[in-house]
Image 1: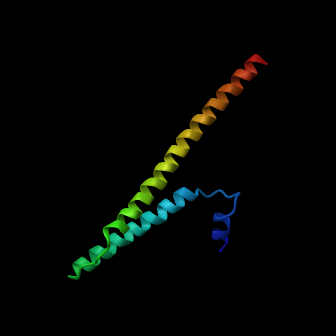
Image 2: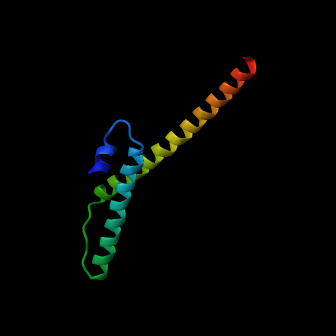
Image 3: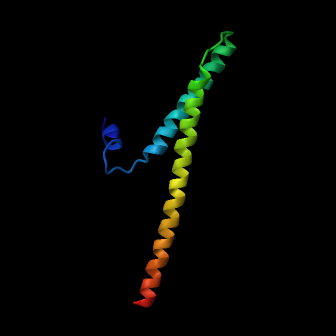
Length: 91
């Protein structure tokens, strides 16, 4: 319960995009495992293709956005540190 409260608070340390992407990835892995088990038992598991594709898009989107966000933030921090060092040299 405490984890959920922290997840939805405004001042948390949890990356929500990564959390959602990880949960969608877990759902994809579970669907694959169930499909393999039912296939081994000789039964067919019918998972609609658009449901699987939806989870795949969520995973790719969440991790892609998270990667771009980290890249942008690292560039921003690098630029800020350069501007601070220039200010110290001038000051």
